[in-house]
Length: 394
Image 1 (tube, rainbow, N blue to C red):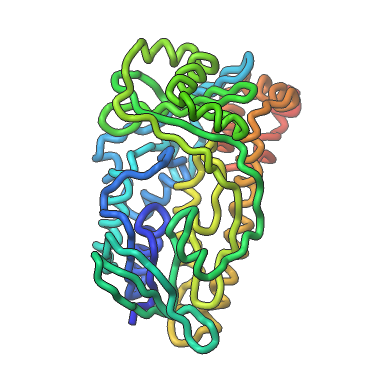
Image 2 (image 1 turned 60 degrees about the vertical axis):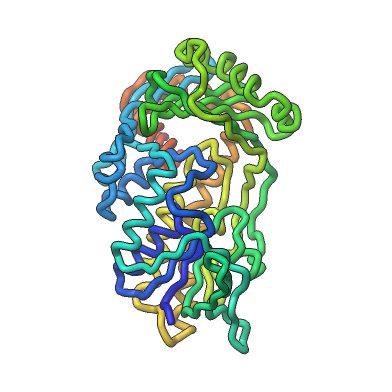
């Protein structure tokens, strides 16, 4: 019998499994995809997530992959241009944007190195329950062979369309409408830092990543999705040209290095985080529009929070485990609610004049600019920006 079974081996599941194993637990990690496959993702890791990688001893592996540090940010909207760097957290001032087929194996390998048993190409088809309805394991198929495994705790880290969430019937505790649709692809020989361009009804970003490629993303209002998808590549280029003309010039008639990817299914929700014998982490429990690129950093935070609160409470006393899971659910919601609300504000793609006035004051001061980029990275909240200096400028 395992102490924990983790369903999903990407940015939430692999760290949760690794940290549990490092804490001395016997852990099984399952994933439906072959290890090392890519997935739909903006793959930007803000400084809080970078600090987590450093704590786990994995940051140097990300650096060694050739992924460049993102130590300068450019943000443009209306007549405003901010350039600078966040103050950072735990000494980490740069972000990174590793490709998911690079990052996810680093995380999964670290879990295995910690003692996790890992099975990829594994489909979970059901949950095992005791007479009280408590989840006590999983059943599924591994490379076309049926299996059952038991555990004190089953953790769903299997994404927005989580099988575990469906099987436990985890209700939505917060749900908001979809706000954007997004498209992206990669370009060679396009010099860029981390660049963000915002306009009415539009958003464009450029992010350097592995292999000398630059990820270029465009966002559109969700109601335009059906029209955009008829000629998504043409709409993608037009959006870059309109919102970020200098970036468009750098593309210089080049062809993208990979196909265009996109989605109109940018859901915004919290699901119930835990119940008797189960927990949800990452997108399985909480998802928001990718426009602020908080997903990976938030997944790392949830994995660390869950394992820290579990402490030594996985074992033969279900009440102790359930108490820890309740604490996790409460702390997750408190920690992620501010970022959720700020993400929805950005995803509405309607810059307000009051906010533009604030940004005009911020751009006049390097320190305020750094505090603003802390907010972008999820390090600080809006209240931290309202320093006496900003108030006097306003």
